[in-house]
Amino acid sequence: MMNLTLKQLRYFDALARHSHFGRAADACSISQPALSLQIKELESMFGAALVERGAREIRLTPIGLDLLAKGRRILLAVEELDDLVRASKGPLAGRLRMGVIPTVAPYFLPQIIRALSDRFPELDLTLREAVTQSLIADLQEGRIDLAVVALPVSEPTLTEFALFEEDFVLVRPAEDADMPVPSAQTLQTMRLLLLKEGHCFRDQALSFCKFGDTRPGAHMEGSSLSTLVQMVGAGMGVTLIPEMAVDMETRSADVSTVRFAEPSPSRTIGMVWRKTNPLSDQLMQIGAIIRAIGGPVAAPRASRR
Image (cartoon, rainbow, N blue to C red; front, side, top):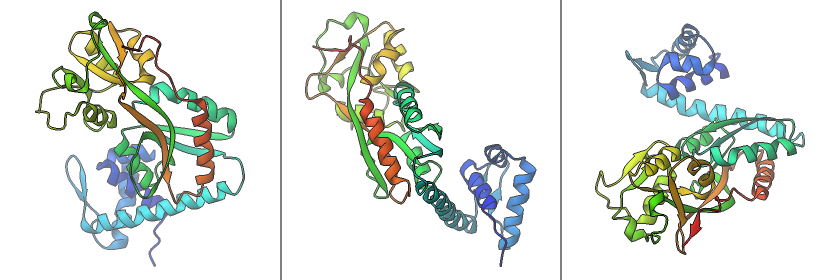
């Protein structure tokens, strides 16, 4: 019987995620030679190569892919056993790994941290900011315990818990403050600044504007809401941002903000976690605490005309 260890499975999982021995070693807080030795021991156990070693990155062999899939199921089961022990001990304590999307993290995370610290003083909250697709993968593979995202995510393995709804706000140059509020159809004729692909807020903005058949290059992209607002201030176009971002992102930009006429575009922010997580009851309590905060609100100058 092979002496396969959980440590080796974790190292192999890190190597698969980073596709590079050096980056995987850094993620595991060990030296690259030590990681390489562990992978070689795994390959010796299986009597076959698990990775194809390239100059810049590695690729998993068919046996390596099979080991990765089975190994991740084992690691997830071990995580859930640990959570089962924690759930049996009463109030939530210890490590809790939370993911948050970039269009929520800077604006609402401080309130979440304060609320959870007050309610669960023994909680060790670790945070990861990433786009929805990455957070869902992290959830399903057991790397985080819950995520704050825009709903729905429509993953049958995940529980969804709605927190609050918020409107989208139009940001345009300051000199346009007295102009009529454009309709979704009118926005199609304007230079619309959007987040890069991968951000769910980008998809929601495109959906509102009915840009499904937009030709490439009809709009411009930015890496963050802050970048988009500054580009608007420079006269490069208009953009949509969630109302929670209005106060922080527009205070230093020469822009005006306005709400759309009803029915206005909006999104639902919520939490998601694995249905199999033994901490589900405690995560439901966390959701109720965050929901009670009420959600951020837009700055008063974002008016509806």
